[in-house]
Length: 418
Image 1 (cartoon, rainbow, N blue to C red):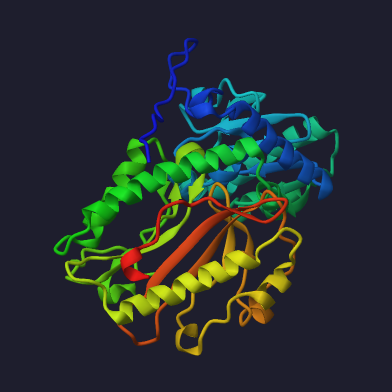
Image 2 (cartoon, one colour):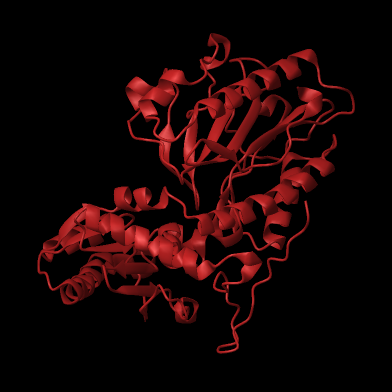
C-alpha cells in the first residue's frame, strides 16, 4: 500500500490551512461531498416535518457543513459550538476566537460567535445563561422560518436549554432520527472519503503488525497505529481496543500497560476517525510469536472468520433487518455468553445507524428496517469462551451496492491462524 500525501492546501485569501476544503485533494470533490450531505439533512428534515435543526454534536455539524473544530472537546462541552439550519439558511455558531474556521464553506451562510450555555462556562448563573441562549435562538428561528411555533430538532443539548426553547413556544423534536437516516446513505464521492480513511488506517495497522514483539506493552504497540493515523491527517482513535493474551477475553478491555507475552493473541479494533472525518472500522487478531499459533488459537480464529464471512454472504439490498437476523450465523453455545453485542452496524463518520442484531438478541434489542444501497456496514465477530484464556476479534467494513456487497477493508487476515 502506497503512502498518500494528506497535507492540506493553504488558502491564498486568508493564509489559513484549508482543512477538508480543497476539491482536488486526493482526487475527491469535497465540495460535492459537502453539498450532498447538506442536501441529505434538509431532505430528511422535510420528511420528518422539522422546520429547523440546532446541531451541537460535532460529528453532525461536520456532516452537515464540512466544518471541524476541536471535535473531542466539543463533544464534552456542548453547546460550545452549534449549527442552526433551515431549508434555506445555515448559520454556524463557532467557539470563541475560532470564527475563521467556519469561513469559506459553501454550506455555511454565516458564522457567528457561540454563546456557550454550560455549567463550566456559566457556573451558578447557568439557568440565566440557558434562558438567554434559548431566547436568542428562538428569535432567530422565528425570523428564519416565519413561524412562532416552528418545530425544531435537537440532538445533544443540556436539558435546561431544551426546556427554555420549549418555553419560548417552539415545538421540540428529536433530531437524532432524521440526521442518522441522512447519514446512512453515502454518495459515490463520499465513498472516496471512506476509502481514503481506510487506506490510511491500513497503513497504520501494517506498521503496528510489523512492530509486534513480546516485551512491548499494549499501549506501546497501540501507539504505533495512533502515530500513523495522525501523521496522515486523520483525526483521532475513538476507542482503546488493543489487548493481548488473557486480556483478549472477554472483549472490551481497554489498552493498558500489560506486557505482551510470547505466543499470545493480540486483538485490535481500529475505530479510527480518519481522513476527512470518516470512520475506518475493521478488526484483526494477530499472534505475538515466536512460535506458531496453537491449535486452540487457530480454532478461535477459524470460528470468528466463519461468522464474519457467513454474514457477509447473506447481506444484500432489500433485506430486512429481521430477515438478516434470522439468516445470520448461529453462534455456538460455547461462545454465546461472550458474543459481540452486535452482528453488524452502520459506519460513516463514526459508528451509526443501523444496528443489526444477532438472532438470539433480536426479540429484546432488535428493530426492523431495510438494508439499502449506499449503506456502509461493519460485520462483527468476537469469539471467546466464557472463562477461557483468549479470544479473537474480527470485523470487515463493506458497502451495500445495487447488487450485493463490496468489501472495503483490504487488510489481510492471518494465514498462520487460519
